[in-house]
Image 1 (cartoon, rainbow, N blue to C red):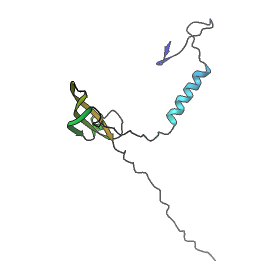
Image 2 (image 1 turned 180 degrees about the vertical axis):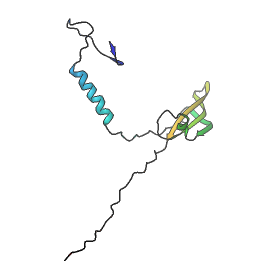
Image 3 (image 1 turned 90 degrees about the vertical axis):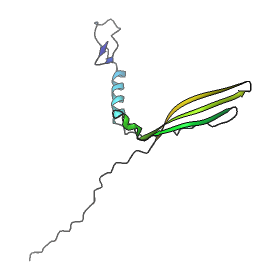
Image 4 (image 1 turned 180 degrees about the horizontal axis):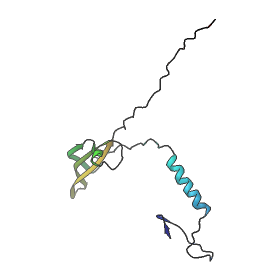
Amino acid sequence: MVLNRNEYRRRMDGGETGQIQLTPLFFIGIILLKLKSLMAAKKKEYVDVVLPTSGDGVDYEVISRKKIEDAHKKYPDVKSDPYDEFVEIRKKTCYGNPEEVFETFETVRYRKYRPAPEYPTEVKVKQDVKKEVTEKS
């Protein structure tokens, strides 16, 4: 049975049909989902791209590399940290078998994230206010 886009189990103990069995596990799950949304977000860490290098039996040659700055602005609906996107076309020559040499052209896209800008936080400065007290005789 689907209720509010959530699926629940029907009673299996011979109760009235159409009644929904709400188990304690169901309520614990709802509490955990609410707690998860209240927790502070962790700082994201992005892995740097490891580009292939020429080695035993394989040669890589970069034909063209295009850098698209601020590529995250092309998708305003998706919230993301700022990044630059690279489109690289490279030629891969595989000569592991001396009788056959294969040349393959690859198009690769990868991102390099920049640190997110820190938003300024308000700092309250305490002002020392001295009150002048006049004595009455």
